[in-house]
Length: 420
Image 1 (cartoon, rainbow, N blue to C red):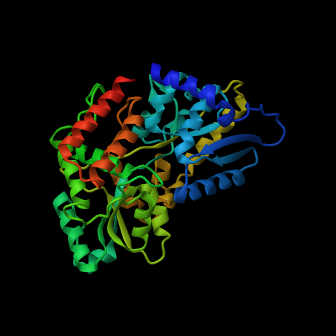
Image 2: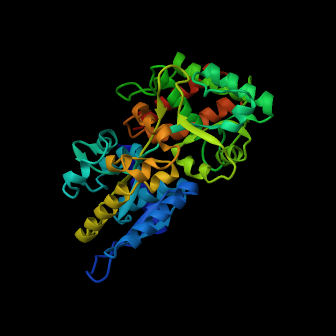
Image 3: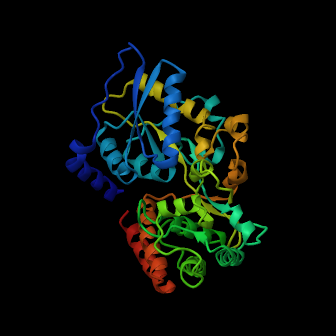
């Protein structure tokens, strides 16, 4: 953690004037409590989140939430600076995998004394417990969002395919059949940096390694654990789809993959469940959504979770903390609205409610939660995840020797771990 503390100090020195928000103002008791929120949600899910904020504000007159969108690539840099300076927004969103990067620094408020047992009892156990560290609750899970597979059912029908592929071999065969019969791409896996890094490759690589019984890191988080037959099989297959089999476009970025699937130019598309809301609004697109198939053995799929947390402020206002808890309670309790974007709610009352179950597609992949792969609980994982995206992009798009690539990935990951 020494490296993280030094990074925070450096960020304060050079970035506070650029990024930190104004000091928190105490509530006056006149009018609604004014809260501020920074959102990292963009694209399709951003519109759904903004709509939820508007509905929350309209639902009562005690609290008013102002939501400012921050570009995803800048979000954690800006947030880290503001948290270290003690003047972050009143409520923040964090990926569950990032909690370990902030909790040890004391910048997040423990929530145990503010949240009722009745509220907590409504949450699914696994995502809620993932928000605890050293026995204290530091965040509330908003959703679970695993990677899933989307299928253009019209292209499969045209190619004479009557079942969703369940193994790597079946997938490759189906993708080739679609390309030969329809002239469209069999597979749409984004594999290069464009709007975002090549995160889909990393999510699939993590999933495929775990499907074979492997893991990304050793049990004590001290070294890489994927430079073996599990990692080799996963990388070779991902490379083959682009190169030997040529069923997946090369140098395909995130936005292009999404647009091509929406236009009916590919049969199989991989993304997080957050893509569902955008896809179902696409006129004329006939598709299915399913948990990531067990391509290489057992069911396993990368996942993460958006969580709400309350920062420690220079001047903590109890009225704002109370209002923030009410906001979080409302957002998680009305997460059927967030499920419209495709995300899986974490509260049982929402999962069992009519509003959620009336939504198409969601029930088809909600069961994926039972076989998700949690992110390794180490502060190094965020950097490992982003770096692997770059290394996997090079290995796949340039068709590099798989063993040489794995050797390089292992060495890089071990070097990253050594710095934490």
